[in-house]
Length: 417
Image (cartoon, rainbow, N blue to C red; front, side, top):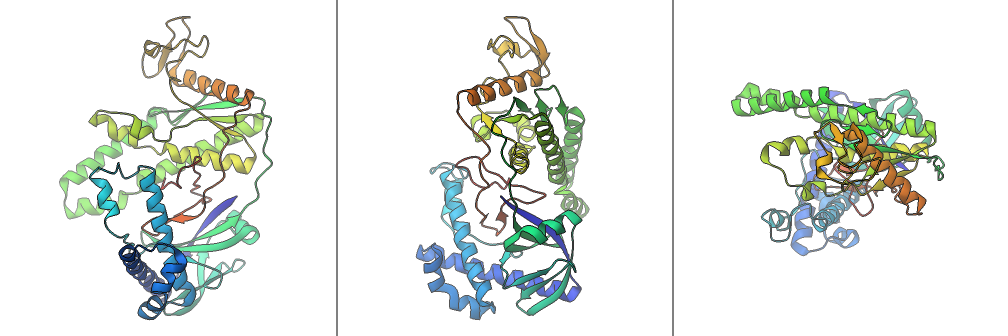
């Protein structure tokens, strides 16, 4: 399976200036190539290279490899855009958002990620340095920092491209690694059902609740502070908003990793598979009142599912996706379905047999039962293989990382997210 190990670069001021100039040149060239591709209607790599290769090299002083990767990045961006449009992520064909996306060329950010192959970037892992091609010449001995585990993964499994990334004043390299998968446990003794929710992020069929009301309180406080700062709209408020802009996303990612690691470890220890809800398109299917929208959309449930999926593949744990319909209204003891069974957010009381349980635990037991029934009938819905490496219109790679693994459902695009 493909993983991407992210390491932080520690360039000197002179090296940082050269890296910055390189990203600016590559993304300016990519934006121009995008305009040519859009105007000519030519989005295939080889044909687009014929139209733009020489000008990209001469006008922006890019080397042969850098020019080819820049052109390919444009082709990948349009391929991802078409797939997103086809999946309905920019609205229907008659919506206001659809033409705003389709009727203008893709524009690349000034510091969008740029791919480097082994001719443009070489690693000296033992010395923790890298040699990077730039528009100002080869920059040698660019220091980087990484954990011992990351260094071992790089030394053993690194293969393919690396991406140069600039984010929040810091430089990173994302290195693609081909990591072997553990043998899949194709005969689980049972399944561990996972119910995902707004108040309790994840509840297992064993009755364990992870990231509950305390996290909800913190999220509400952060959302209130963000609203106050946006209303204030002073220079200091804007600076504080900019400083805090990724805080909630980082917290969510950290908690999702911890939940995924715990769930996979428990399933591996007990010889069970993992049962998850198939939530693709849930935001489009659910209608909410305005006050509920921010709460409903503020947690990365797809990310959590992706983290569980890739960690399960590494551990050889089977993952099955089930239809979540009526799992919160169905009694796990007698199977009676009734909206009134859900007495409150936390309490489930069956109107037929009188069974009482925590509502999320009852839902997770239903998810486990559905997974077992699917498996018993021989209908497999296991965690799919990771998607191919893709880039979006801003030049960001869509791939699996050791700290931010990306894994799609069958037929879906790499998320971004």
